[in-house]
Amino acid sequence: MAKLFRAAIMGPPGSGKGTISKRIAQSFGLQYLSSGHFLRESIAANAEAGVLVKTYVEKGMLVPDHVMTRLMLPRLEQLNRHSWLLDGFPRTLAQALALNNLYQLDLVISLNIPYETLRERLSDRWIHPASGRVYNMGFNPPRVQGKDDITGEPLIQHDDDKPEALMARLRHYKDVAKPVIDLYKSQGILHSFSGTDTNRIWPYINSLLSTKIHIQPIDTCQTQTP
Image (cartoon, rainbow, N blue to C red; front, side, top):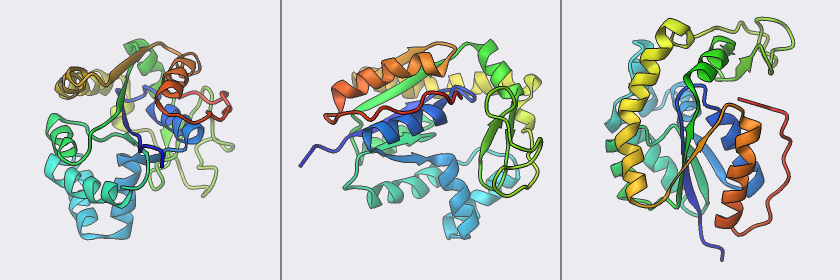
């Protein structure tokens, strides 16, 4: 039986984590677990943890570490026979240490994208709140302006995607992510990738994973960018 492979991807808002994560999952057969999607599912299911999460989300607050770990770790236990890729968890050092107690990650990808690129991407970003589907007016616009392709419901732009809030978000991300990045660097599993174009970063990530996961990668479409 092939060894299970456990990985995580980190990066600031607008770094293209979602796009790259989906390519990794498709190319290498990993289960992709996005904490954002999972939080929305938990809220929609009205589960006990979801009700707890909703109280924070509705107030625009970050979900505390103990709630995130209570939500995510049981989900990972359900996937204990699968290789997986985490996006959005662990976000803090406390979450990383809680994860470390159960699983040893094989690889952590960190995306370093210049501020100006993030600002441009996020100023064009519109979201369907219920599903989390993301559109970009520059390269991935909705078929009908301002409407979700699947439901036809209105799209919104998050206040924290607007330029005046972005600098504070990025500063917060760096402050919170630094100890997590330092932890994984000390474990020798951190790999950082820098650039402004997801399609140019992707071949390097694909090449790295090809040496780590011993399956033949599937060639994926590279037209989508974050």
